[in-house]
Length: 287
Image (tube, rainbow, N blue to C red):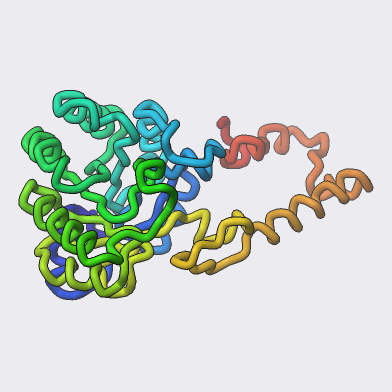
């Protein structure tokens, strides 16, 4: 199928076709998500939570994002690949922001970068775009500003906050963003922002009127039973399925039921090379 680009996303907004976005952190999930038709893959700094086990996204570094971009990129051929600029990779100076955005593209293989913040980062966005790198903005609830916000608190409920977010959205479009994530804001406000912008909006906890939606894939699959915010819909309960599968494996190992005869190599020379399971390789080929 045709490669998804920034132009594809603009065209989708123009014809009213919703855009599907999911986070991803490795090649195996990348292949699965692309096979399912996901248009945009985000290597989010949420990797700090779901991969590294941190309470916030703040410890994530540019090196971490580059590493996961490289892994995800190997599993993609069609989807549009976006990399998050992590905390303190773009806040200190414009030059540092451009350099780090360049690393995500040049070393990681990202086709665009995403950064959090409103009008105060307009000049940063202009400079990154001027360097030839598409920028996806992100306003509303900002995980990198969790301490300033006093936690993961819905934004834009007051008239003053709503006005500021609309100003932010318009400023980021003017600065050159090709798309804008709206996180944790009232649906009515997200609908108004979406109506006012010519660029696509991608919602997470922002209602159904956005031009697209994004979720952390681990949340969609129900891998963490202890994390159930209002905006997440679990399409599977893989936590229970994985625990059940691994428990069954452990029981069969303890009872010597695995490996059975059909999983055991015989003495025939033709079978000698049929290995590779530990590394996901093709049987009979070196991995």
